[in-house]
Length: 325
Image 1 (cartoon, helix red, strand yellow):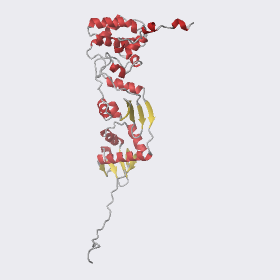
Image 2 (cartoon, helix red, strand yellow):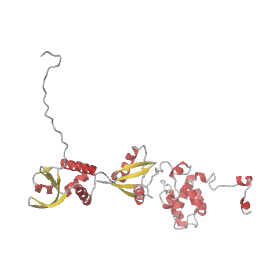
Image 3 (cartoon, helix red, strand yellow):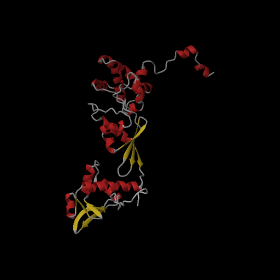
Image 4 (spheres, one colour):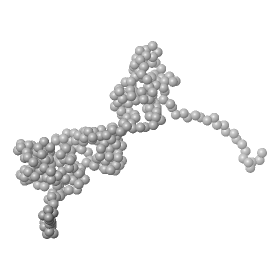
């Protein structure tokens, strides 16, 4: 008996209208969801209404028409109306020729689906769309960390430099057939790439890298060999204060500042703590005095060089088996 109250005839069922009708199917998912779940005061009403105003302007760019449409939509999107001045500030922002949806705000991210939005008539344009990105992972490996960025279903390994610089990120993604559309600064957002990066960092997860000891030794030996090749060496110990490396047949000695400058030249902007950690991991030791000279420095065994031994080969001319003796 209770259920019979809600039983519908076929004709009545056909008359039912689902929420996403022919009109809202062209709206971005965030606006549709704002209409389903009205935004309360203090939960991002202004950001929600900004996206509504952007949608209104996409539908009809005439200022009078889109502003009037936005005001009418406010009761469908917000539990409480915005102050007229707040609404005017939104209109000023939308009047900017570079206006776009605010996809990165917390209220929009709750309902965002860039793939769906991109396909909709009044959704984000292709130039506004960012590739689908997952949670960033930092792998704390030796001698420096690297990053894993899930993007468009692929796990991309990036160096710190590639992640920090937008151009290098774009170049790295091309290797995976992913085209990165650069985030360009606007008056409203002067550094969008930094904002995007900060969002990734806020939710990143850390993972320890467990490389083999042999691999660590190889990296250290290779780095110190390059250091020795790149910096002028000397047999006068007091010359290490001038940026040289002192060495004999067994070991090499140098200032931490010299090694730090070398690393910077190699593209690693390490601080003293990072340089110290690297040297200690490789077996180098800090010293304060040598040959009667008082100066803080580091000492480590000379890096192993690849050996190329010349074999003592003797060539002896003999007659072939078919030749006469």
